[in-house]
Image 1 (tube, rainbow, N blue to C red):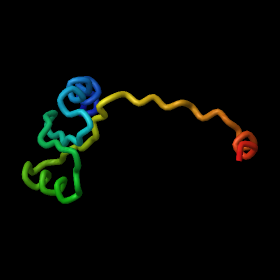
Image 2 (image 1 turned 180 degrees about the horizontal axis):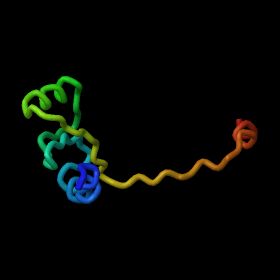
Image 3 (image 1 turned 60 degrees about the vertical axis):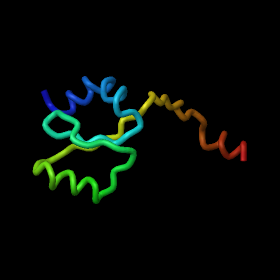
Image 4 (image 1 turned 45 degrees about the vertical axis):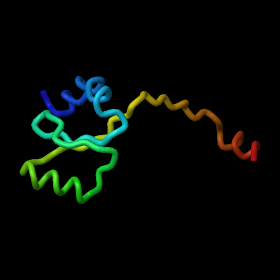
Length: 79
């Protein structure tokens, strides 16, 4: 199973525990998390564990975007 599959399979668990946070994953485990993830923090994590990590933001709730259906002419007419 690839890391992508692990994240997709366990996303609801990740969302329950790390909602609206950044997580760093290595060897299929969360190795760090927090409200922000600066480049310095990411470099420090990589150096500390000594192997590549994957970072991603876990959204606390699903966001559904409405498709954009107006034509350029309709937008210009409103302005």
